[in-house]
Image (tube, rainbow, N blue to C red):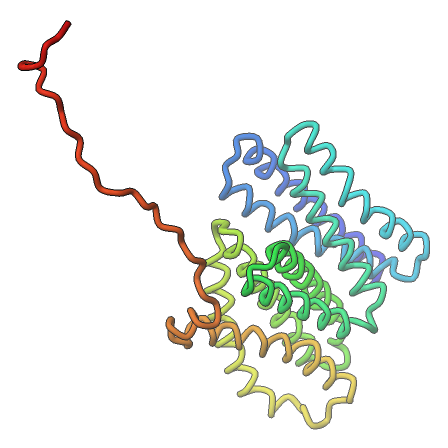
Length: 294
């Protein structure tokens, strides 16, 4: 990445971050949840893109890596302490978003060769959270939410770094970023639905329709992309880092839309509701006309 392009991208995303902060601050003051959650989502996208670009540019700088590693516990701990003192909900929202982004930068950019390993670990964490939710194990919500957030941010970073494939494989330089971004939206949409936040169903249905359409497009265009002439590394990137998460997302989509409700209740039985046992009784009203009133 040239220095001129780096400066332009950092400036544009920095301005975008400042613009998004305005509705986020206002909505957090008046606690208008829809705008606050939408602004947080846009802030995360812009923040992930900004930190990804900076991390790619300075990835070989050891001092920069030390700074990133040092900022992770700061954004995890200090703002939550300030939230307890001030009661301002925007602090944990911003700090949590940047902490997740910095963790993903350390995983997916500083250790780019281990991208596949980290993606699979996060997928295992997500599946573990689903199993914990199935058996109502405490901590299932935190495990599932953390796994989905890290997966979404990490796969967005992977999509940005894969743009460098344009010189060697133009097909992958388009397919991997598009698929990764759709998977990130799908993960965030599932997270929003789990937390019952507004906008979850929009992202989930948008990503579901996109996955179906893009799957059809890939099946039609892959034979003409020179797939059989790809290098082994490019085939690994396509299958291991893109298609396997893609197939897992397609599996959950099929489960949600195709499995009959009675089978879903067997797999994930609803929680038992304790009935409100109120016995029937009659109220006898005293006839005050005939009663002796002293």
